[in-house]
Amino acid sequence: MAAAGGVVVTADGTPDVDSTNATLGLRWLAGGVKDGSIPADALNWNEEAARQAFDDGRLLFLRDWSDAEPALRGASTSTASSAPPRLGVAQIPGRSGVGTAVAGGVGLGISPWGRNQATAADFIRWVGSEAVQRELLEKGSVAPAREDLYADADLSTKIAYLPVLAAAVHSARPLPVTPKYPDVSAAIQAATHPVLKGTQDASEAMAALQTQLTNLLK
View 1 (cartoon, one colour):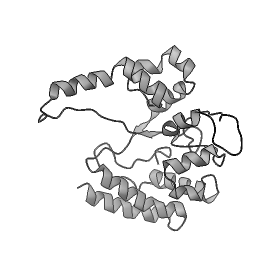
View 2: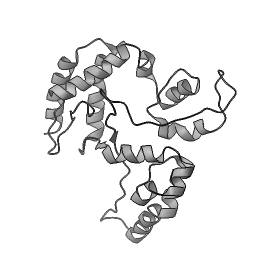
View 3: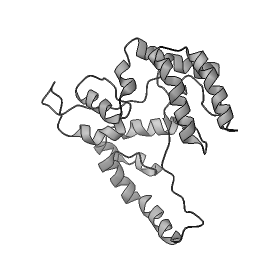
View 4: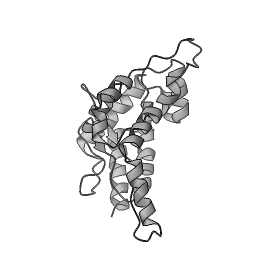
């Protein structure tokens, strides 16, 4: 939807999933399943099933590559080859050229009712430090929260995908911002799944979802 110029929830918290662009984006995604670009089986995969399919050579692209990268970095478990896998990273494809990533993050805050606020503040300073952010990137493929690490020449040499990740992060749009995010996410999944399966039209599904989200976010 973002790659087609649509949004799920606008900046003021209003649902906008029945817009022309959002519907076009969903219809385009469903077309990928219909023509086989996206395996129909993938609609029922979890992260591990997708990683295994990629490792077995049954997928050309893996969307959840950042979580799977540490496991894929080692010796291949694929029966197709005994050689270690050769991995490359690219920005998500769009309808015409590079697409638009939609990303979230892990926010750290201190409760005003917390009994150990100073300790919490120390932890935030520690986990956000240059050394810890660097280690999380190098050992866990976690996108750093520090801008300076994306431009670090040494890291870019060791982690070939870092410049691509930087470009994706800088152009990404945020996930829907709402205190009811779990409910919004569940509603979106329920509405879009039949469209991706090819059993419902995108316009019809998005019209119903617009009504559902409008009631949910009142």
